[in-house]
Amino acid sequence: SGTTRPVRILKYVQRCANSGDVLSVISAIDAYCSKVEWAMNVGDEKGAILDAVVLETRPRYVLELGTYCGYSTLRIAHLLAPGARLITLEMNPHYAQVAIEMFRHAGLDAQVELLVGSSSALIPQLRKKLDIEKFDLVFIDHWKVSYLPDTKLLEECGLLKAGSVLLADNVTCPGAPDYLQYVRNSPRYQSQYFPARLEYLQVEDGVEKSVFLG
Ligand SMILES: O=C(NC/C=C/[C@H]1O[C@@H](Sc2ccncc2)[C@H](O)[C@@H]1O)c1cc([N+](=O)[O-])cc(O)c1O
Ligand SMILES: [Mg+2]
Image (tube, rainbow, N blue to C red; front, side, top):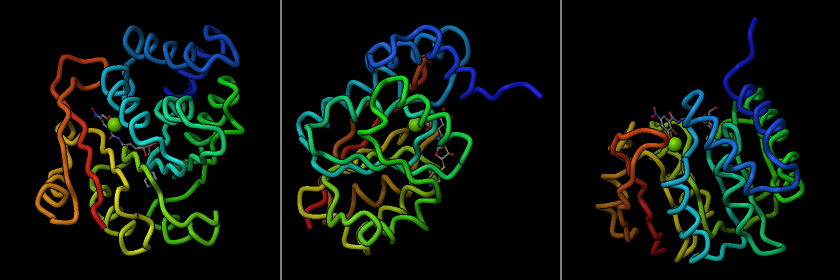
């Protein structure tokens, strides 16, 4: 039985990226996935949009849905102020383990709280479990069919406040049409589309930034 793609990415990072250097970990993942084998990281083009939204939001509490190898987790963690908290939810224990090793190599394992489980099961527990009232920024990059139900769940659990920012990957490819229709037509959101290429490919994608209005 061979390794998995996330394990191959992690081994490449452990071999080629300087430990403790998050930017070299990020560029090593991008190098591997653009030259050796494609993987569903947000990538460097959409990653730059994510960076800009993190910097403009200056979030204290961040939630990520879908960790995978931890690429976007690292991009976000690198830009947070001391004392900020980044929670990332991953339901595949193998991917979670790879991501934890990735965070360790980058020297950011103390900056990230990874919970293993499905977002639908974990979101209702976050307030009690983590003593967090509201999230300032949510990065959505898990199953595309879960974007809309999980957004509604975040609203119902009172985890969004006026000004909370949702940033959703892949709203064009693979697409999240029901989510897009909701955030673009609901009076409770101010939504904006940022076109970009799908990671490592010449295919059109984009991210949607939606500000919750309360
Ligand atoms: O399918 C995609 N992403 C699904 C991501 C899924 C990630 O989130 C959890 S699922 C989960 C985690 C937490 N709670 C519930 C479910 C999986 O274990 C994986 O780590 C995708 C596909 C393409 N593409 O081009 O085909 C491009 C992309 O950028 C993508 O993000
Ligand atoms: Mg994605």
